[in-house]
Image 1 (cartoon, rainbow, N blue to C red):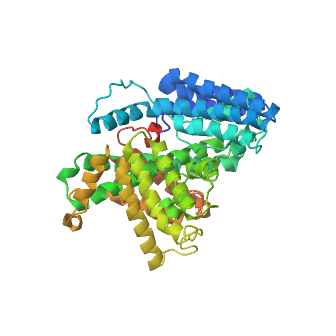
Image 2 (image 1 turned 180 degrees about the horizontal axis):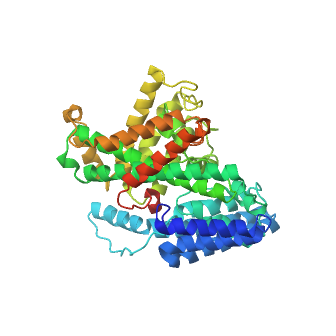
Image 3 (image 1 turned 120 degrees about the vertical axis):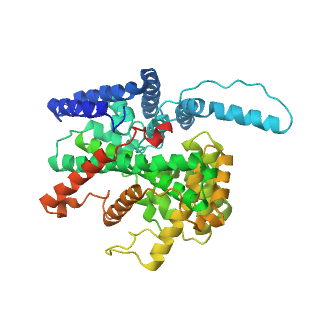
Length: 477
């Protein structure tokens, strides 16, 4: 079930009405409704994979209870590894089995040997990377005694399968979201209004920006040998705003819907394309995943506590694993490694924590230096996005080879002025609202007629520029 579908626009009001009809004091009944609604939401795509979420929930719930009763370090470590192996085992099988088989066959072929291993026709469960990491955070935090194990299985099921962020995040920590299922939720009108406003902005990002940019990104990427360098650069630009509008739009909708039900999810994007270096970009892009890898992989590996070699090693591990998390293709691995290379000069110069403040705070325009830093960071991010979008490494290299030619400074062959104007409107709105959690959070300062005119403008644009209904990009991960 897609957020931007008719089915969801029927589903959401029904669940919302029943939820608040039950009342915030009936916590267990509300949790049961959320769990049932979440399973209906996920089962709408393919009911067969509901068993996978249920089994994962049962395993980690049981391990959490066992960890709470066991103080022996050896036994606790065994329980932790059972959780890790079960969850990553499912993820590895569904997402990476064919990738490893094909890579192994290609490796033997390179050395002149033929290996006969059959690949499988595996359907990747939507959102498996997200809810796997979410439930793993519970087990790890209970193991590290940062969280008491829950004895409310229905509440735990609701936490694992919470429908607003089930299939594409944000990846919530058990320490933040799980306790919210055990307290009374009261309907807050202002919080609900703010949630609806964030949902509106998220839908605008998805329908108007992402889907329209996708149309031209697909045309240019799929026929890259037919276009000159400047057009290919524009294609990368369109994909950059496709993936940002798509994914941050989903996060905005998820966070906004959660507010309607009295839950607070963590922020997942903080205007990343206004970053002044790649380190700042990664503090602002897909925050829930970046911090997950930081806390559960980078720090356990030693983080930045060791010598320079350890810092470099851990940096490459974290970026390459992050790339591999995104998909079973060498393009994602190279995308991760490329970002690690971008990050390395900042790490060596000890400048990876320089730009932690808001860019051009209190100003309408950035300084010339800031503008140059933003432009450079955005450009190298575009280069990396080419690998993320390409079908293969060969495709990405061919795309870049055709782009970096003298024709990159010639006339653009595909120039949709209307879509570029919409992207410019989007950029300006994001820039003006960059001090908030999301771009239009603080429109309350506007007078009521102006504020409603702005809302109506967004809705009109959504109806005017609705293209073919497309799944969110991150559903594939």
